[in-house]
Amino acid sequence: MAKAAGDGQGWRAAGRHQENFKEKTISNNSDMAEMKSMFREVLPKQGQLSVEDITTMVLCKPKLLPLKSLTLEKLEKMQQAAQDTVRQQEMEEKEQQQITE
Image (cartoon, rainbow, N blue to C red; front, top):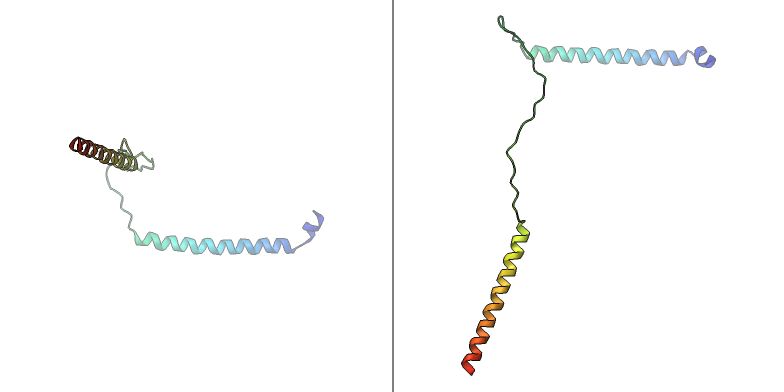
């Protein structure tokens, strides 16, 4: 503690930091003044003036999900097609057996 109090360099560095901070805030304030000059403020001469900063929920259109996934539907179609071809082959075999008998 005594060393820090006797050391003047720490205080000088803090002072320089504070000066840099003041310069930055001054430049930011001038930037804000330029931005304000770009937009003209309009206030009504009569009536009430109100400001709303309350965020409200926005309801979106519901997304309907299919009962079956597309992959499951494709697999079912493939399975049905395979079963149909097996039935067709069995029918052809039965017809050939009846013809040969």
